[in-house]
Length: 180
Ligand code: PRP
Image (cartoon, rainbow, N blue to C red; front, side, top):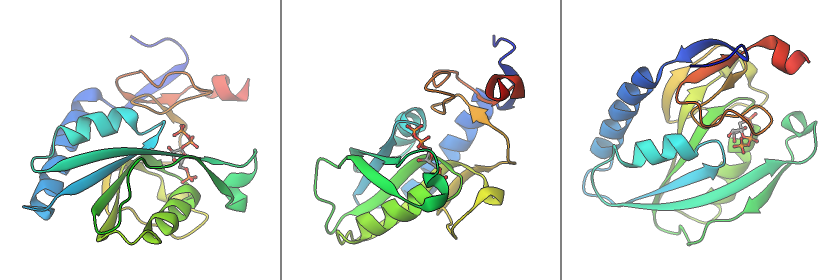
């Protein structure tokens, strides 16, 4: 179903669905009889978030946050800015931040520090994808769907230049696309 912009499917929609169900089960068990506030980090996590929340049983509230890097070099400089804050306070709540990918770790390090200052009861990070080889800062997710190599991935929420987020599988982009 994809064109030549896609080199290959890395994680199929079937494999994603299976793993998301497992992660939902694990989270449900870990938080048995406790309310959870799931925080979606816009925009990349939106597809994973929508699937994951429906794989969790128990009391779930949802909220949304958006952060963005300053300029082109920020993934290394560590400067991140708030674009859209949460709608509700999280003090005393069990918060799980849901991400599509941890890459350098810069975004999540910033977000974790920012949210911990609001004194949640607990704070965990759940990511679909993890690229540990790319870390610039030490950072570990608490729930990780798939550890992947350093390849440019798109689909299931992840973009190239704001395109391809709607592709149902996690795909590897053809190098010709980003090398021009
Ligand atoms: C992506 C992803 C993470 C961040 C991870 O977001 O959703 O938030 O990059 O990278 P890091 O570990 O190197 O900080 P992006 O800034 O591309 O925005 P998007 O979610 O709108 O696609």
